[in-house]
Image 1 (tube, helix red, strand yellow):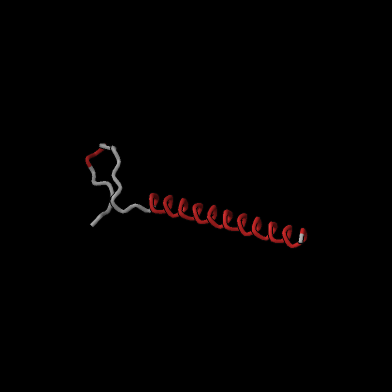
Image 2 (cartoon, one colour):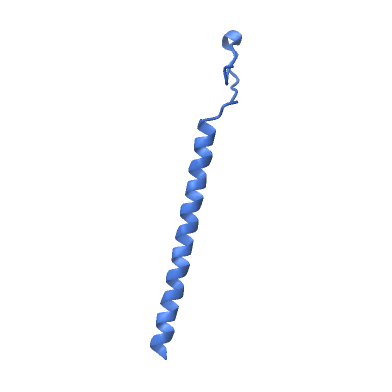
Length: 59
């Protein structure tokens, strides 16, 4: 009975660790998507006032 309990405990612990790893990877991909969206922004504006030229998307 002790062996069955030990094997079950290890299986539950392994499942918990795998679930935590998947959640961490998922949050990393969300972070990378946020960065790529910020870098590829179409309507971004800066405070640059040199030359009064339009900044951002060109029609």
